Structures are given as C-alpha cells and as structure tokens.
Length: 458
Image (cartoon, rainbow, N blue to C red):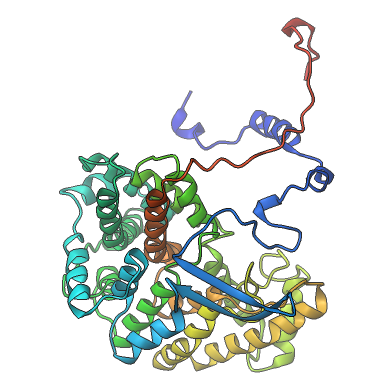
C-alpha cells in the first residue's frame, strides 16, 4: 500500500463506519432536560455554570436591580483594575503596555518603574530559541495551519528542558515566562517557513531586538524590511492586551485549569490550550469577520447606502450570503449584551489607524454595520438578551490594516492569551486542588454478549 497517497484519503469504508459512529453517538435531546444536564456547562439562558473561582480577571455584563439581573454595558477587569483605565494609563503616557499588564496578571500588582524595567529585561533575555531549533523543528514539515505549528513547537520545547516535568511554582513560572517571550518567534517563523516552502515566498528570519517591546518585535520579525509606524506598534500592543485574558470560563482558559489539575507538564498544558483556541468557535472569529466584509464590499455598490448594507445583513441572517451560516460575524457574545468593553476601547484607536492608512470609507462601513446589525438581529430573531459587536469585529480589521497574513490572526490571539493561560496555570497549582473531573450521566442500556458467529451482518 502506498501510504504516502492514502494517508489522508477518506475511503467509502471510512464513510460507512463514520455513519455508524455518528448514530452511536447521538443522544436523545429530551434526556438533557430530563436529567437537568447543563450542556456546554451553560444553563437554558446561556449563563455559564459556576465551576471554579479565580481572582485573575472579571467579566461584568449585568447588574442587580431590585433582586433581578439587568444587562448593562460590559466591563473587563484584570486583577481588579478596569482594562479601560489600564489602557488609558499607559497609552496616555505614550508607553507600551504588554509587559506591564503581563506583570499585573502574573503577580497581582502593578509594577513600579524599577520592577517593570527588571521584568522587561527578563522577558527580553528569554527571546532566543535553542540552537538549531528553527532549522531542525520549525523548518521541517511546515503546516498550513500556524496554530498546529505553534503547538508542535511548544511540545518539542519539552525535549530541551531539563526540568520539563517539575511543577513547582518557580519552575512553572520560568517556563511560562519563556513561552510568553517565545510565542511571537514560534508563530512568525512557522508562517515564514510555510510561506517559503509552499508559496515560494522569500524566507526572512529576523532575530528579535532586546530594546523593542513585544508588539514592536512582532512587526520587526514579520516584515521583510522590519519597518513599522509608531501608531501600528501602539495599536498592536493594545490589541494584545485586550486579548490577554477573559476570565476562567472561556474554553481555552478552562482547558488550562482542567489539564493543569492532572499535574502534567507546562508544555502539554499550553499545547492543549492552543488546540482549544484554534477552534473556529473560539479563536478564529476575526478571520470570518474580515472574509465577510470582503464579500460585503464586493456585493454592495455604495458602502454609504444604509439600505444596501441592511439588505446584505438580512441576506446573511437568511443564509443567502457569504458562507450561508446565518450569522453576522463579530456581532454577539456569550456574556456581553449591551457592549463588549474591548470593542469600545479598541474602536477609537482603530479609527486613527484607518486614517493613517487612508481607509476612512472602510471604517465608516464597519461603524454602520456595528449600528445596524443589532437592530436587524433583534427584529429577525427572538433573543433573551441584547447583542452588540465583540472584540473580533474590529481586531480582524486592524490585522488587515497592519498587513498581517490571515494565517497569523489566531496565533496573534495566542501570543496575547498565553499570558492569561500562564496566570491560570499558576493559580490552579497554587491552590493545589483536586483533578477536575465533571460527572457524566450514562444513558445506555445493558445488553447481553452475543458470540461472533451469531451476530447479524452489518
């Protein structure tokens, strides 16, 4: 058998067996109600089931009025600090914030000047890969999906760590800081390798520069000429901070807690979190937003015509446009209803970048969709809470304006979220809890064993 040609082949036999597997996996939906099972760890209103405690961040989207929960404009807190205040703080002083907010999330305090300088230097010292790692690991068998490349690289780093299985807090902190520092290089080098070997592009491998911030180094490493404007680096820095953490209940952070609770190594935990974030229901939404707008701009003759834009949005909901999924991507969130604070914070900076790039008309179109989409969704569909644009609505537009390849959109998310994952891993280990093991109700019936020569043919 030629395994080279059959490795990825789906044969008729596999299709038949898959059909049997699907039938075996289907559970009567009425049983979920009968046994009061919270599917997806959510109740019937979509509210998450309380599964743990955290003091890393807080997502607020409602307030209590006369004993009832009332939707309100969303707010996001990192270690008790409103993210809006954090961004206004460092942005107002014309500083980059990634390193400062990383320090806050990991150590539960804002650093003073000396602490920040020392911490920034520590991260910078970790921005170098083991000898020949790029050649021997990243350049070999490059994948079309950078998240897979990133996960593979993280798992391979285990082999280079003499204390890989040590789960003491000092060692885990060291590992997490190294991964935070290395994620940009692992992601971008993986993209450069794929772009070179599969697309025939020139190969650029720039070394990081110790005097640059994390955001600046990303643009420096990625771009052939290493050039970028101060505004480009500033907005990428803010994007990283807004994606850095979002409570313990999001899928990848919960994955981090679950896998950490088994006391496995840091590399396995972070690889599992990467696998979670890779899923289109979690980390890939901003790609869909950009692709949706690309089609929208082709289909609509006058971007300033509200009627045309509204008609297109209706087509999206009616599954008559784009990917026929019936969704307006970038609109709606599992928690936020009236507003996503990350999108609100981001919007003013996005407008400035669109002006620098000469994309005022595109920004105006995004703003119009932001205003029209919630109204149209509310008229077309029964919803238990309001909807608003989420952070993915604008982040994809920003990455597009920064000329970031679409293959790196989700890895950029990971470059930010590795900080939150690290904080959650440290928190789980510090509390020394039991292994996380939720209950599943078995609904199968007992059956008698039948000898093979007496079984009916399939």
